[in-house]
Image 1 (tube, rainbow, N blue to C red):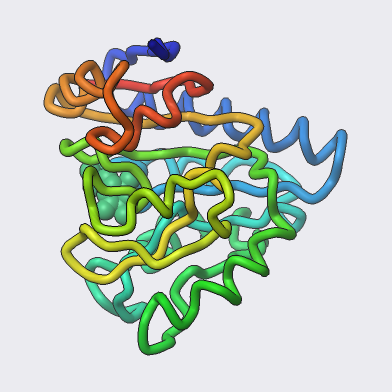
Image 2: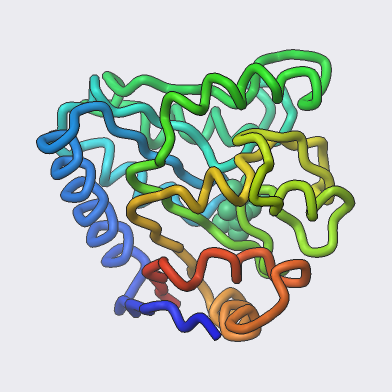
Length: 224
Ligand SMILES: O=C1O[C@H](COP(=O)(O)O)[C@@H](O)[C@H](O)[C@H]1O
């Protein structure tokens, strides 16, 4: 059974500031040692405050490539666009200099866009720093419990990027092997429901709890 390290913060603001600092340190170390660096981040509502804090930190942002774990296949001005949220919170201030690899291309479907994105993504693997979110249903990225096609998204030989089912709209996602390439993995969760879901996920079958695929090597950051 994989028991992750869990860091509990007194509140969400402390979690946002501390995690932003830790990510910046990990990115900086990689920039100093290797150069080109990648940062893969979740969408959803939980990470916005952490993104705002991170965007302000001094880093060689021009050598950091940022991309989402997954994206909803909606236009850039749609209220559920993760890209739009990222542009407003992370890709601003000093971090505006980062290279952004957008998973939404405007193609008719994610299936059309995925092969080209999978090829482009190879240049950014292994991921330097991976931040994952988690839904109350234990999904992470767009790996949804028992969704059609989940087996393929979790296969060790899956391409880095694929279309995904199981969400409210069509989606595109990095696959499990691409996400598992990360050198540093952080899972960010807030609220008692997610904390309970995390406890359920520990030791669960990944088909029922996809987040469990990442628990062994991750640090979980939690605030009520
Ligand atoms: O749909 C998604 O949801 C999860 C969790 O989002 P939250 O709003 O509960 O924080 C997120 O990690 C994922 O990237 C996103 O596409």
